[in-house]
Image (cartoon, rainbow, N blue to C red; front, side, top):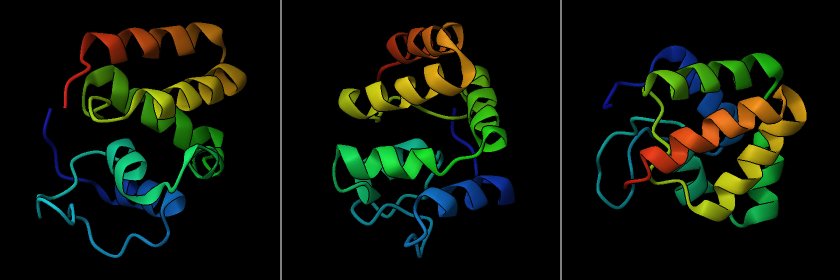
Length: 113
C-alpha cells in the first residue's frame, strides 16, 4: 500500500540510516513509501551493517514498524530474503517467536517488489 512517510516514519528511517539526506530513491527518483526497503537496498552495506542498524531500533520503534507491517502500510516486498532473516531474528529475540512467525507469514504472502 503506497503511502507518504509521516514525521514518525522519517524519524525511524533517520535512526537506522542517519546518512539519509533525501526521501527518494536515487535510481528511480520515486519517493520512499516505506522504511525497511530503502534501508536494505540503499543504505545497508552488508548483513552485519543491516543487523547493527536495525538493532538501533528501540522496542517502541520496532512495535511501530510491526504495526505498519500488519496493516500493510510498511512494504516488505523489496526487502531481500537474507536481510529479512536478520529482521525476523531481531523480532524473535525482542518480541517473541510468535510475532516473528506472524511477520514471516506476511512477508511470504506479499513478497513482491
